[in-house]
Length: 464
Ligand SMILES: [Cu+2]
Image (cartoon, rainbow, N blue to C red; front, side, top):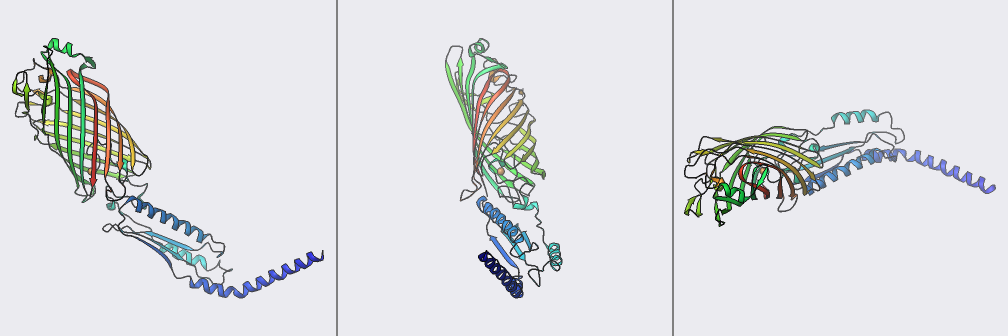
């Protein structure tokens, strides 16, 4: 009992002493706090923010700053939630430098425990002068990461899935001054023929024609270049090198092979963006291809050593072709999608008195971004192409179906499975490697005509 009273007394004395001491020291504390009123600036200079990792680092630092800001604001020690922090992110268009400027301004007060009266005024002034970051979209570069303020607002180009599945072309644009070079390898395998949606055997075809194709392989090496003229206009040039190989069988059961290879039709496309908002983009595709591919490909056949090959073995169309189209893209943090419609309109008739049929291609895809460097895609593509009008009089349509201009048209729907890889850092930064495999789910051909069984496209892309 005695002990308890004594202890209570001791506690009381200690408490009173502490209160006295606190009161005595208060002006001193206030002095210390005043000393801290000078701006406490934390500046990060991110020179050459050139990769996604730096960018993620930057984001992390911003988050840390925000946490610190919160801690300081809620600090009970200072009993002052009026502490002010302003944060400004200033992207510099030209040098790609970022700066986070965090300023902690302590409000002025005379006594640390009596801070409610003057503080709000100081605080209001600070709030009014606090700068809000203003960033324009001119800053956007096709393979550059988006600044934090644009995250979740604009379409982000620095992602594996910001490029469509590799077999799709002209589906993205570049910003001003940006150059992209690309190489694609395409392999298409055709075996067996069909009439309409039904398979037809080679024997059946041979009842009608003395010769029929049994198999065809088409390879294409496609060299591409893109250049951002302005932030809304990109020019694209495509140079294909085509390798074709066809196996035949005759009514006499004799097989023979023909092949052709060379430069195909060079294509120039202008891509003009008309919308870039809410993480979606729309651009028009205006393409033109020139008759640089041969329509005089020849090889040895049973008819002789240097025979003109039929239509599908030629390397170009021989006509000036227009490729008008429109492309739409959209994305969320983990998903992206897009759709493209492109036509092929042949102008005039080629020097061998025919023109290939016009074409329409409609495709749509969805992609899942698994990480900063990998995404997979699923795509559907529908294509319809017409018959040849006119004819090359040197080809006899009664010998082989491929020489008949009225057995060329068709409709095909394919499903494509794609993988996109993107290098977000290091010397190979902005490098892309992608592959897509396409399988048909619907084929209707004006035949007998060889049917496409599968198509593989692999590509490399680099942006400077
Ligand atoms: Cu490009």
